[in-house]
Amino acid sequence: LAWVIPLWFVRRRRDALDLIVLLALAEATVFVLKWTLAVPRPEIGVRVAVPFDDASDPAFPSGHATRAFALALFLAVRGKDWRWGAALFPYAVLVAVSRVYVGVHWPSDVLAGALLGLAWAYALEGISRRPGYATRRDRLLARLSSAHREGG
Image 1: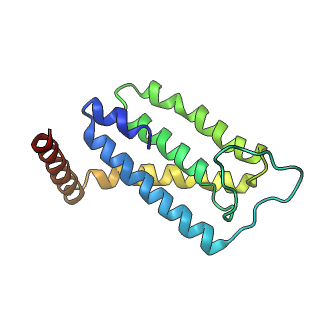
Image 2: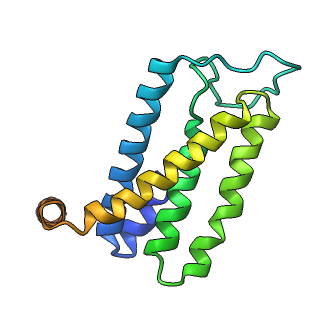
């Protein structure tokens, strides 16, 4: 969500709101799949302790990989210069590989997460172009802007 703030303040508010929607959809899907499939995490070797990382939930799919790839594709498509957004794909790959390296995911978990993130980012691009979604999003942005003007 840290990417939402800069998008908002450079007046790319549609992108900021769409990113929130994208991450919410991806996170909800990851949650449902994790708890429905209940794939156990790896029990091989020594798990590397990662600060602020709770690996107590099921493994499949990797939420980290899902979010990283969703963000990379979203920013590559929405960015003014595709090369800037495309530079986030190596970051997404490193996030995914690191999850296997620290011993909290199987390779299949991160592959599924990467595909899920890419699928949601692609789907949101189509959804955001639909008049019904775009109208509701723009109304919400107008309300947020008027509330900000009244309060400040």
